[in-house]
Image 1 (cartoon, rainbow, N blue to C red):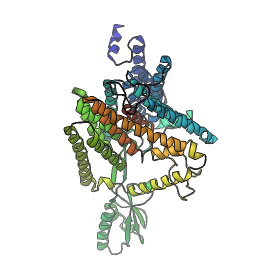
Image 2: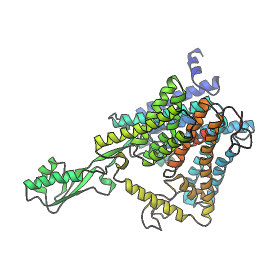
Image 3: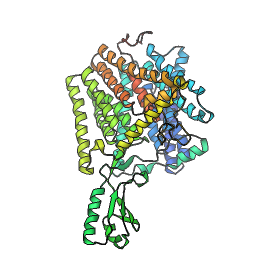
Length: 565
């Protein structure tokens, strides 16, 4: 067995033969998955990756195991199955922790707050009385996600009793954001990262197993219409051509509303412009009909990285930013380097996702850190300086390269705000009667066509695009109050704990409180359920904020069972 002795140097919860066996399974499954993916056997690769995710979730120490599903999700991206891989690994980790509780015949440590995530899981179950037969499958998925989300929060609060354990988890979370940003930077720079994904697998899996794969059919970088589309510049060039050729008919140039024509301008003449097709082509106008053509409009890149949603990328990056500062301020060696790399990667994700909600949420979190955080003045200055420098860099980059202010770069930005307002109005108006108590069980459109009765127009699925309205719609007023209480309890607990500890621990709870404020503020416009990558990240953040100070005892918000180990 000496040939396998190197396996003993890998991190494990417990050593011995079982740990070696699990590492062998994990490494072999990962290697086999990469091999079959390279050979085009995507479905085989998927199940190999699933095997690796399970083995890794079982063998790693719990702080690393809790973040391992995020990294296995990146591997799952190769076969366009990120949420599936994340949920599998996440479920195994929570099950592993829960089985330990059963064996020890005890409740999770933590005090009174543990009943909030437990209550959310129980109350979500009551949605079964409101759903229809067609909603059963989706309801079970949402219930399962709530169970593992509550489990992750409880597991962190119960098991991560030392600052070192929390630092390990935080290191994994920050490293994940570095991977996200590095991947999307490479894609934007021209390295064909996106071409590595086998997008056929998700379709095959959905048809074969009936699994909702949540496919990412947009790509790591989405080019959206710029607010300054270039219609005026193109019109000026055509008018100059008309001055030289008086028989070219009058023309108008504008950006189309339909998403089908992203990156295009509509060029419409009052008569036929076919005789000057070559001259117009030299200006970038492709005549589709005698009097109608397409020009090239200005676009701006919106970074998404491996998650399927730019808001997810921004939300994960924003929540991880305070913990990146923690590593940079309190660690040495590689962890300190990881911390500063995480600061850069997080600010990049917040900025280049072009998500204004994430910027505002980050500002609020850092404001709390500066005003109430138990950190040195130097560290407060560094946090503010990093945020300001990132904003200046982002603004300068977009003004120089795309001639547009990044805060208002997207042409559809105002439309997105109006859509959310209509959605929120529809969600609030549609919850009444018994549904005010137990909700609807799932988020869904108000009619089969997805059209709002109240507004007479298409809007997104009711209960989406906001954490609090999502819970209000799915679980009624009690569920909404519980999720608000969970965020508030976590933030206040961390603030109290920051004053109970000192040194690195005080810094940890200060940044944890800032991270909760960021997540809570961003939750106004981003659903906790947007996709599992985000749900797991925020669950870990809430759990970290609810851990007990290493010195033991209780904070003002952890009465009940003592939280010392």
